[in-house]
Image 1 (cartoon, rainbow over the protein chains, first blue to last red):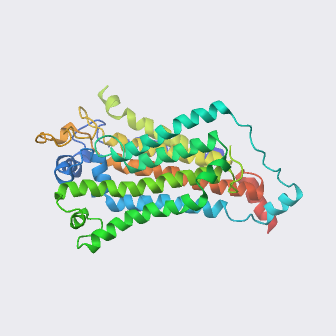
Image 2: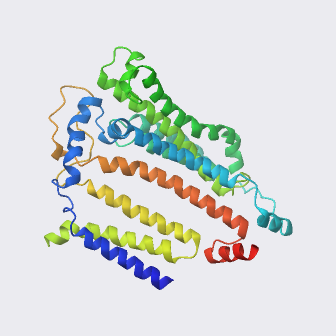
Image 3: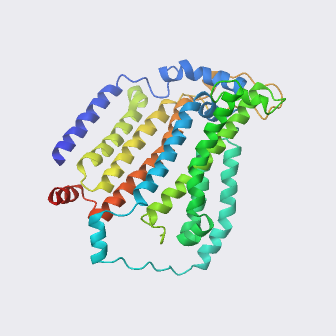
Length: 255
Length: 129
């Protein structure tokens, strides 16, 4: 089996190396990937959206459907983890548990240095996450990155204190709906655009609400709105993944 | 020399991809399989990001200031291709979420069968039937 796997790996690798001889030169400005649509993005995205960070402009305006469904995938993954780990165990595991019952979880000794360091670190981490979200138009950043930073700040809290203390402040009943709320907000923006007479997720429809804004600036604001939805979903899902994985789904004892 | 400069980076991705593929096929331990798949995914992500590279171009954030004065002339050669960055940005976060799901499945299998070795789990499924 191992020999077959090695053979197969080298076969695939050899084929890919053979194929890579036909690739355009790396770093070549004239390569096919960098000629057609990419040049349109670079030269026109700023005129149409007033967002200097082209990545944000493409992510949340040109490729809006893609991003919406990526957010839905993240939400689905979070829901799948709940469904896999929070449901009752199967017959084999139940029998083993009755034969060798699990030891009651012990509370770890508290470490004042760690807790103090976490207290100091937590607010700036949060602030930095919000900065990355709102400044994503002008510098590297955006909804996904901000969501991961915010999620990481909650994980920091769960590591420095114990999991139960963190879950008493941020209970499951709060962050579980938040995973869905972000996606709902994103789709809601699209539906509002639809109701105001434009296409789904065409931000120009929002001009009826925010009056006196140029068509370029309304796209910039629309991008910020949907990125907020992405941030909420991603941060809640990251925290949900951590809490469920670390406690094997029972939310009693963390690391 | 020019040949090496223009395509050595593809060799790097192929080698990384081979490591991941071998891990995903040959290892029996499910966690090691998952690590192999993650390495595979990393190779693809690096490959996409490298495609966006252009010689002599800067990051895809326009140098326009915050609406002060007229925007400067923008030419495509100044900035690297932003599209692979957009695609991989979402792929990384979705990758984290799917790895989380995979770990949850493995954890559940461990709770059920007491092992993460694939052959032992298969044996237990066969003997139970």
